[in-house]
Length: 175
Image 1 (cartoon, rainbow, N blue to C red):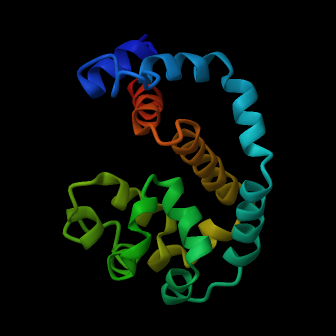
Image 2 (tube, one colour):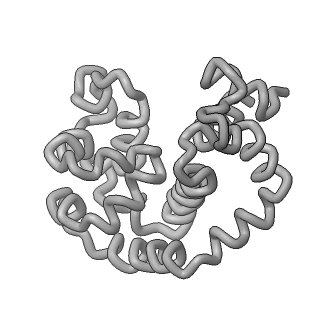
């Protein structure tokens, strides 16, 4: 199994030291890894995180079409973050096209994109076949919320050091 040093070395080509006085990515990763359970619990219980989840649960049941979903930035941000696509929040046209894609058609927009996360998003929502059922059933909502918490924790825990989030993502997906 790979460890943090290996992951950071693969991702950054070094031990992750960015400046002489800055804490190295590896040292920060070790510190976070040592206290990960406590950090996760603190993060999950944060008021802003819980508010985002409650807002998502409340609003997800009321959407009638994809336009409504794309207009609701708070709910859309939770969904996009769950698929590690949070940076796409300012591309509503692209998101609409992805969500309207026929996931069974290999030539659909979502399936033609190089980044498979878009196809995963389209398949999860699967509006054409299921409406918004995956956003409204408790088990599907919980699956999405778990992914949201995982991705948001990984991006938040390293703060300004994006290498930490990359290392967590790498380790989670390589195993």
